[in-house]
Image (cartoon, rainbow, N blue to C red; front, side, top):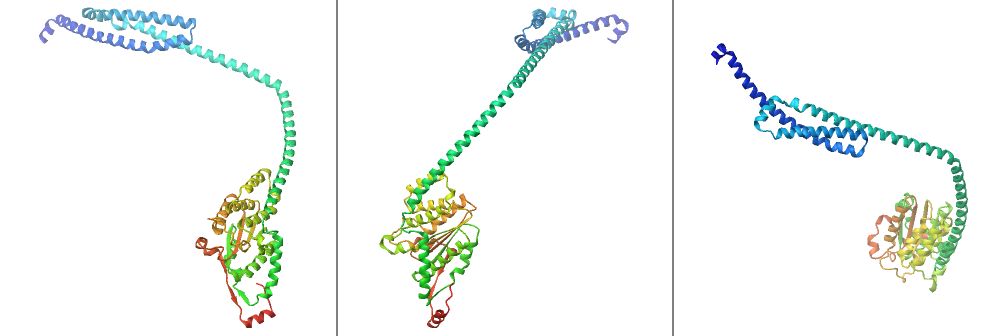
Length: 439
């Protein structure tokens, strides 16, 4: 080959040209296949977009641009179809005589230009629509402003007239409703008071005066008896000083009746002297008769009556109607205790309850399950939830009969203050007759 190149280069050039012809033909054939495939893919992607533009903006210019696009597409499809149906020899020949850049490039450029024109026409049409919307909005705003300017004065005058009439009607309605509610509250309050005054404990002031008189008479008769200083008990001081609702129990036997009665009188007098609200239940003169035997329900009615009298001005028609219905439905001790709690909630600040359980006749057994300690503790817990700032101090005075059985086992020792009575020797009795000192 080297010898042939040196002596006959024309033959070598002929061979080299033949080889280049074959290689260029294969390369152009491959480029044609790639160009047709890529063009078909791009056309398939652009046709749905063109269809949407023709639906949204069917203008003359858009239709003309779409027609030009379809014409160029048809030309391209015809040329591609002819190439696909050619044989191998024609493919070999046309790959040299009709390279893809000369055969298809002009049509593809026209198709791309038509597609860009359609997109630009669609964008311009969208801008026109936005401009129309803007103009319409400006027109609407101008009309609204004009309408508001013409109607504002009349509307303002109408609103002022309506507000004035509503205020006048509300004032008249409120005054009439207040007067009606007050009358209804007074009527319901009088019904409750008449229902509660039917109890067997009588007037609390009369019972208090009776105990004061009885205590003064018995002070001289019981000089031979002494008691422990239960009134100075730390438990009693804690009960009175802590800023919360609390229960205390003073427990003594039959011989301690005089000491407990005297203590009740003293503590009520001290609270009244300091203008502290106090409600009490003391044994009166009527309790010594057969018809004056009082039950636990009578005691609760007695306390509720006093609690209502302490806060007559705190009643409204709705609360009084509810409580009036509850009073008529109350049957067992727990119901009356809940009503007592509702009455105590009307108080403000602090209120004391001094309850001498000797006012109750022990033959009238309360409802099964009722416990002085447990039920009062539950009541105080409910009061704390509903009125945290209210302090209810409950003082129960009784003996072992009042807190027997199941109750005695569950009463904590830190709230029980015992009263112990001892006989005074003869020598000290004579000294006490000379100088008597009340505790």
